[in-house]
Length: 139
Image (cartoon, rainbow, N blue to C red; front, side, top):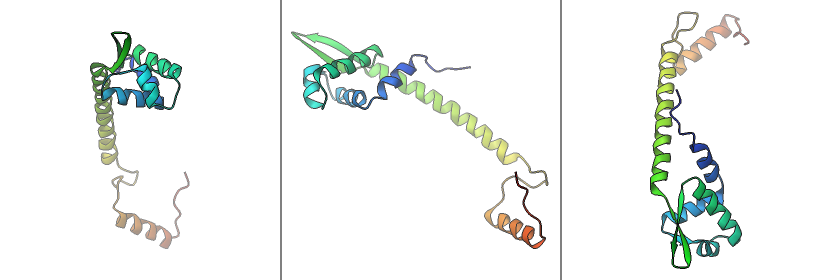
């Protein structure tokens, strides 16, 4: 059962662009117009407008008209939702990895010895193999 929000893919695609990520970080410090952002970033005003449009489509940024100017701001609630989804995903993987670790630690090799040996046990085993003329299986 998947608990991931299907709307996350476009969010991550939007954030994968270095300039969009930097714009979002900048807007986290406070609202700004596209013109002000164009001065702060080494890209054209048109490129800033396109980046802002992508961020708006994913709900990470909102626009608000203030007089003749449109100011953009980061949407904290959307970022929090993305964070919660990532936390759920991380928790699910932590549980899976813990189960795998438990299985691996309790599994035994065909010889009846535990799967995990200490470094000194591995050295003794390798030395006894060499002394007895045996070779480790190849594969």
